[in-house]
Image (tube, rainbow, N blue to C red):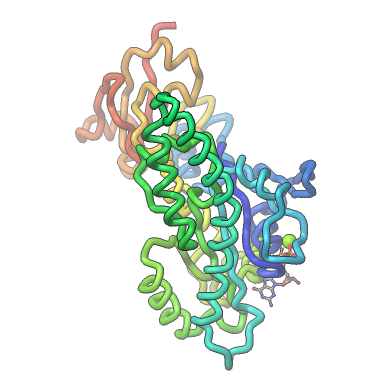
Length: 349
Ligand SMILES: Nc1nc2c(ncn2[C@@H]2O[C@H](COP(=O)(O)OP(=O)(O)OP(=O)(O)O)[C@@H](O)[C@H]2O)c(=O)[nH]1
Ligand SMILES: [Mg+2]
C-alpha cells in the first residue's frame, strides 16, 4: 500500500488536506504524534464494472495517509525525519490563502518552495556525507564492491549542496534505495489558495509561471478549505457545491491520481460475480507480478492471463462482447500490464 506523507510550512493547510483526503474514514495516532488513516481511492471505473459483473463486493485500492503533529517551525526534527523516511511520497502544501494580495505572489511561492526543498536537502546531507566518507575508506582498503553506490552518493551530494532535489536515474536510485533519502521521494506540490480566488484568472498565470520556473515539479492549485467542506457534504449535495464554485470534480481525486503517477504506479482490475476490484502496481510490472499482487500462489502457479482493456469491456457491456470485437488477448508471464487492464489469471493450483 502506498504510504503518503504531508509536508509543508506551519499553518499552510496540511491538516486541512489530510481531513479532505481522509473523507470521514477513521484514523489512529502514531507514536510520533502523527495521525494515520487508510483511505480507499474513488474510482468511477469500479462502479461501471460492477454494473457488468453485479458482484457481491466492490473493493477499491487503498492508500495510507499520515499528517504530522502541529508544527511551529519550518524545520523537520529528527523524529519527524525518521518517520518521513518510511513513507513512499509526499504532498507538499504551500500557503497562498493567507497572503496579502499586494505582495508579490510568485516571490512568496518561490520562498516557500525553496524552504521546503532546502529542508529536505538538509536532512539528507549529513547522511550522504558520512556515507561517502565511510565507503571511500573501504575503497582505499581495496574493497570496491560499493563503487556505483559511492558514485551515486557523490552525485547526490553535489546537488544537495546546491539545495536542489537530486535528479538521478532509476538505476542510480536503486543503488541508494536503502538510505530512504527524503530528497529523492516523489513530491506533489499543492498551492492552497483562498476560496475567494478559486475562479480567479490570476492563478492560471501563476500556474504557468511555476511550470516555467520549476518544470520538473509536479504541482497544482486548489482551495483546501473548500475541498474539506465538500467532503462533509452528502453525496447528493456535492454536485450543487461543485457547480456553485465552478469546480469540475473534487480535487482530492486528482491529487491522488497525480501522486500515483509520479510514484510510478498504476491500476489494473479484476472482475467476477464475487468481487470487482482495483489493484495498484508499479508501472512496468509483468502480468505474473500483477498476479502476485493478488495472491502469492497465483504468481507461483501462473500459467497465462486473459487481458481486456477495461474501457472496452465497459463500452461494449461484457468481456465476451469485447472479445468478439477483438479487444482480448491471452498473455504469457512477461506481458507488461497496461494501466486499466482487466485481468483474469489462469493458474495451476
Ligand atoms: N480561508 C482559508 N483557510 C484555510 C485554508 N486552508 C487552511 N485554512 C485554515 O488555516 C488554518 C491552518 O490550517 P491547517 O490545515 O491546520 O494547517 P497545518 O499546515 O496543518 O498547520 P500546522 O500543522 O500547525 O503546521 C486552519 O484554521 C484552516 O482552517 C484555505 O484554503 N482557506
Ligand atoms: Mg497540522
